[in-house]
Length: 270
Image 1 (tube, one colour):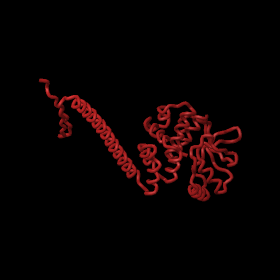
Image 2 (cartoon, rainbow, N blue to C red; image 1 turned 135 degrees about the horizontal axis):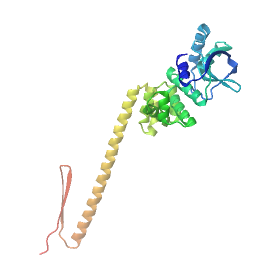
Image 3 (cartoon, one colour; image 1 turned 90 degrees about the horizontal axis):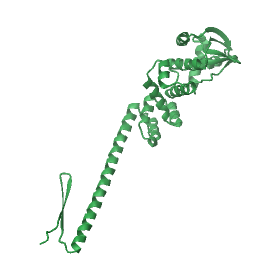
Image 4 (cartoon, rainbow, N blue to C red; image 1 turned 90 degrees about the vertical axis):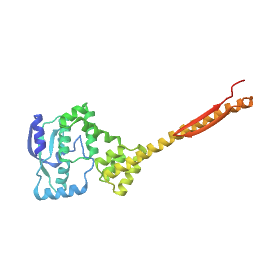
């Protein structure tokens, strides 16, 4: 069990390989994977039935037996294969060590979706009062990598669920974050229906942003023109008042070179 044993050695935990009855192993209190596809379990159970458990799950002692830390898929597949016991690595871990061991092994094995990773980061930080920087150092990644992953949680749960079920990538999710919130669901539906790549979705969103800027520009220009018309009406009204009072005022309006020139001529008194 390459990575887990290495991790345990790094943190100095006692560990041993033991055959345990599956019935004495309870689920992890820090469960990372929310769903395991049935086809994965079926394929793994066939492998276990033929070759046995090559990579033992990681567990720790609990009050009522043993708590699973890593290897939920292997444990469930072993049950499906008809095994009543399974070899396990038993380690002395506190809550923080157990949570980090579960996260690091799943990251190494790429067993987690991008959203499950983000939720695991957030939960570890919340539960153990860790900063993004501290978690990054522990996992051996950069702080921006942790921050970027956590930003994925800005997407509503229902959109995250649709992304995951559609088998879309983390790049798809990041692209949706750049879109206006009220446009994200329609864009996602269009992506799924049209089987759009992440690059195509990014281009679609970029085109929409450019169109929004163009429309905002038109609205600003229209507002400005409205203000100019109001100004001209005010001036024309003032000139008309002068004419009614006997002043022979004249006006002239010219437009050229992107400018409007408005001239008022009032005769001097003799």
